[in-house]
Length: 348
Image (cartoon, rainbow, N blue to C red; front, side):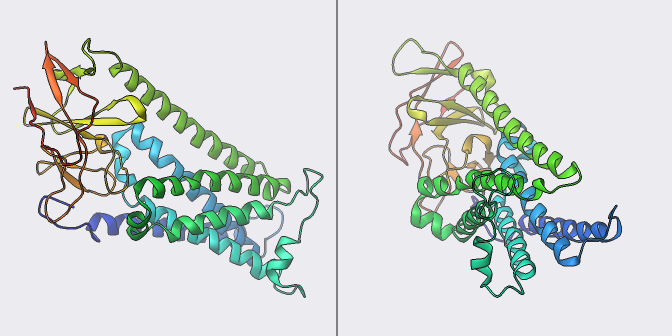
């Protein structure tokens, strides 16, 4: 949304984002199959197997990128544009993973007298040993999770389930990633004759884990920097007035695991819940556009003075009271009911 009451649509940025994403996927699949056909060191790989490997590796790399976007955006604001349309990124990942599954069924079990799905599930039964351990169920479980996430990615499901439940459901991407790692480790890596696949999987795990740990440490330092007591309960220190940048937000943690976003606009401070009413996006990582707090995820906007979305939209945020003492901004961590007007704290 915007202050001009224009709903989010297929804006040029969204079209460019999706076009680049699809073009990159097509280029990867094409290049992988061309390289496998023309640059094979020992013997050429048949076309169906090449396609299967291209789609499988592509889905794994896409899943890695999806999981890296969140922590990367927290570490560097320049990565915030990657958060836009991240749901489209996930849907494309699901489509590529589904392509991998269809190539497996169409090649390995095309001439089996047993129905393809039955043959797929009964292909491996060596549960008692590491080598040969059934890896296909891991892949099926990961694909099912991706299908659920893709099917519920539309805003209808967000409104139907509610932001908290919807977000909790979509945290299943981490389970899908773990299952995909097991699927690859128990399957493709067992027969790999070249170290590259193992290095790619190891690098993926290191990258995803490292970025999340780094983002967690940064957030912990931010929380520690604003932690403390203002000397008069329930007010607490939010930070020096000079630390609030014009047009930007500062996230302040409060008791109960919640957080508050404090924005400076035209020399005045306003505080609202850090969770966007649309999809629980981190409002504190957004900025003020046309006099409204703008969520960095999908552009939903809220007025500074009362946390309400501009008409005709009806979303509301909890607001908070601020106080200035000796150049230090104090925050009352008790939220006001959503949409409660609070006079901005004048700094200049």
